[in-house]
Image 1: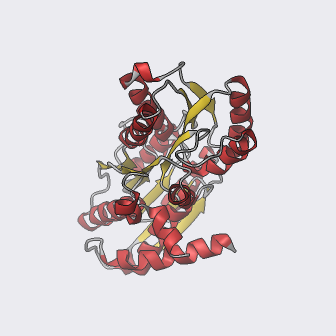
Image 2: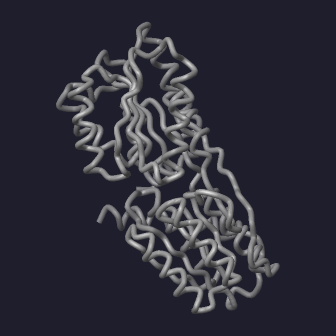
Length: 333
């Protein structure tokens, strides 16, 4: 029921966006294959909804393929779509390497391809790429966390929950975290504790529990994705460390994505900052670029579009809350 309500809210939110994208040839002539690796997080559910609802509202036929986190299966799904004579392909790839392979297959077939929010590992193929600047966004969130740590008048013990490093998004987020670590060397009581998650809640749970047992002084924690906050709460709460900002046992917390959970935690005072991907702007950029390429007959468009994002923090929450996609969803529940 909760997921149904989320999707209904998304549909309502997305109605205004259908008028935004530029013109295109007769929509009856357009078929786009949307091939995604899975819908395992709220962000991907929202991104999927933003793209499919907007295309269908334009009268464009959408062929959907879910690869269930199997890169080889996704490649076969795209090849199958190409044999059906689609006008364009949009993918959310499993990882950066598979994105390159799939894009090259589309290049060979002469069909424009767009890669949404998980960039190819290199630029050897021609594709439309829309991606958040993960390094910059993560750095903005962690910078706010560091500023809060400075107010304590003591050193803190930092940790990062690292995503799957086969995913360029995870690499960028880790780098943004370490940019801030390097910026304030006198702030840290020890080298950062790196906690692998593989973008899997069960892996994250086990590794965070182990990390807290081995390093009970951790009091500065950045998660590379907001979807792991329930895991973090389940580990910190029994230790008496799940406390609001200002409490002596508060662990300075930050994340990245901008989902509903992060919005709730900010509003309730448990979360210090989260980096926000502008989901709706990213979807709009992708669709504008794809439909424009189809209209002008460009079979191999080559364009990288960057979402600079921003950090939503306790300091700017009142002013910028409704710029975060998760807060918009929360407000419409």
